[in-house]
Length: 464
Ligand code: ARG
Image (cartoon, rainbow, N blue to C red; front, side, top):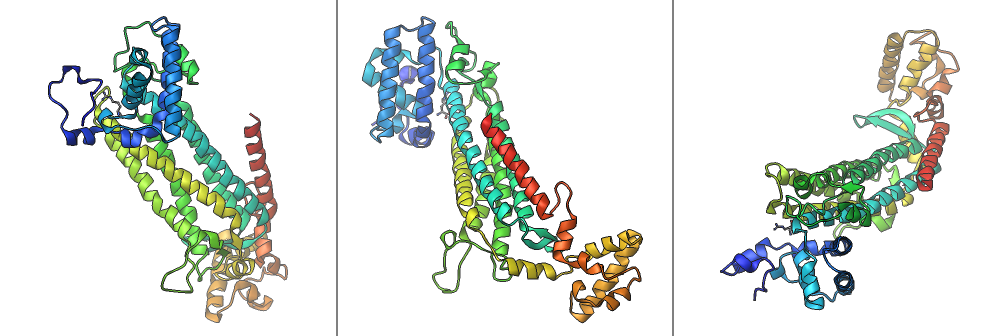
C-alpha cells in the first residue's frame, strides 16, 4: 500500500504502483543517509540561529535525527519505496518521531539542494579514503623499489627488448603514475567543496537564511555562487569518474605487466599464492586473477564516466529527475576504485622477483646495443656511423646465435678498429644501467635518490 507522499497535496489519483518503484531511488541512495542527516542538522541549526524555527524545535530535530542515524546504523530502520528516496524517508521518520517540529525541517530547502549537498559531503569523505589508499599503494611500491633498486631486467619498447633497466626504476614509474592520480583526486576534492544549501528548488528562498553559517558548519569552502548552478551542477561527479578512469587505466597497465611477468614464458616474478587461484581442470595452473580482474574492472569505470557525461549533456537548467541517475555510476566507481586500490596495495609487497630469470632475459635481445653505440661515440665516431657498426655486429650475432657480450674482442674489432678491451665494461648489464645516472635515470643510485625524494615529499605532506 502506498504511504502518503509529502508532495501529494495537489494530486487526486495515487501513483501507479510500477511508477512508484520505477522512480524511487531509496534502494541505492540510502547510502547517503549519514550525510543527509549531517546536512539536515546544519540546516536546522541555521534555521534556529536565524529565528526561523525556535531552539526547542531545533533541539528536537537534532536529537530525532541522531536517533534515526543510530537506527539506520543498527540496521533497524525500515526503508519505504513509497517514500521515494533517502531524504523523504528520513524526514517522514523524523516527523513520526518528534511530531510537528519534524515538518519544519524542510523550511527554506528543497530536495534539489539537499541531494546536491549530500553527494558532495559523501564524495568528499570517500576522496579522503581514496587518497589514503593511493598513498598506501605508493608506500608499498617505494619499499619494493628500494628492495630491488639494483635488480636488472630488460626494459621494453613495443614489448621488444630495448635496454636494461632496474626493477626499482620500473616500480618508481608506477609510483609517479599514482602520484598524478593522487593530485587529480585532491584537485577534484578542492573544486567540489562548495555548498549548495539555500539554492532550494532552483531560485533560492524567501527566508532570511545564513548560507555562510551552513557552509562553516559543514566544512565547505564557500556557498555556491548561483542557485541554478548549485542544484544542477554535477561536474564534480564527472571529474571524479574521469580521474578514477585515469587511475584505473594505470592499475590496468600495471596489471597487464604483472600478468606478463608472471607467465611461464617470462617468469620474471612470482605473485603470492594468496592473490592467485587455480583451475578446476588443469592442476598445474596458478592464475593471476587479481591483476586480471582489476584490468577487467577498467571497463566499468570508463563506462560510468560515459554514463555521467551522457546523463548531463542535454539537460536544461536547473534540476531534472535525470540527475537521480548520477548516483549508481558514482557509487560503483568509488567502490571499484577502493577495492582495486586495496587489493593492489595488499598484493604489491608480496611480489617476488626472480633475479636470475630477469638477468638472463636482459642478456638476450641485444639490450646493450645502444651502449656499444654510445661507447663508439665516446671513441670519436659519429652516432649515426656507430649505429651502423652496431647494427652489423647484431646481424653477425644473429647469424651466430650469440649475444654481443659473448663476441671475442677480435670479432668486435672486425666491425670497428676503435673498439678496445674496455668495450666489455660497456656491454655488461651493470655497466649499462650504471651510466644512466642523471635525474630520472635507471642507475641504482638514481633509483635510491628518487625513492628518497618521494619519501620526503610524502612525509612533508603528512606534516602539513
Ligand atoms: N532522489 C532525487 C535525486 O536523487 C532527489 C531529488 C528529487 N527532487 C525532485 N525535484 N524530484 O535526484
